[in-house]
Length: 88
Image (cartoon, rainbow, N blue to C red):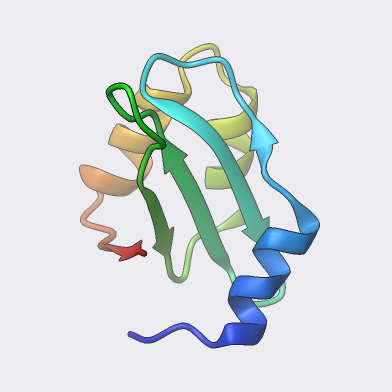
């Protein structure tokens, strides 16, 4: 799915919420469109950004509030079969 320029602008202007994780750097959520953006750590370079469509607010909250955001991403997105779209 191609994301609109306006949608991408929303994420860049609203900013990302930083999390403490060895895997995940930050996350942003658009409650109206139910789209989650996650930035992962990179090895010596900026990490990759992915968007996930149709994500409930509870998933965003789990990623940004749980002790292990990486485990929340694994359990609520990857193991649940939610496919991400790589940006950039």
